[in-house]
Length: 85
Ligand SMILES: [Zn+2]
Image (cartoon, rainbow, N blue to C red; front, side, top):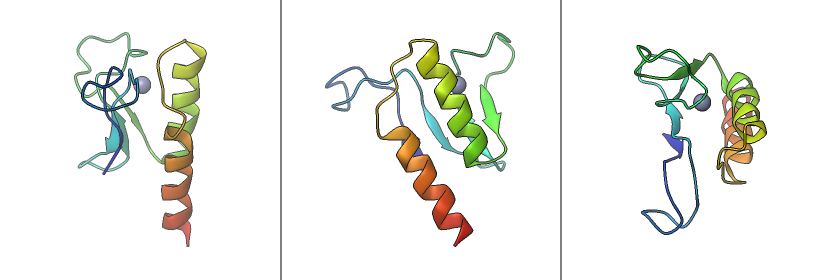
């Protein structure tokens, strides 16, 4: 499941997002092609072990001034809470 995809306003989604975050097929949650990742060999970008770790990671993107839609952190929190029920 994708929490958010790359997008400029209206192309292809209504929101503006510099991040693409989804549940990894290998476990954990990926931030694909992460802009915070300085290692060019890391094609998959950043992988968080769980939702809380990804929420912290998303906050770093926001601090860095990257476009992150407001719904991303609530979606991650919701998925975490569903998993813990
Ligand atoms: Zn990232």
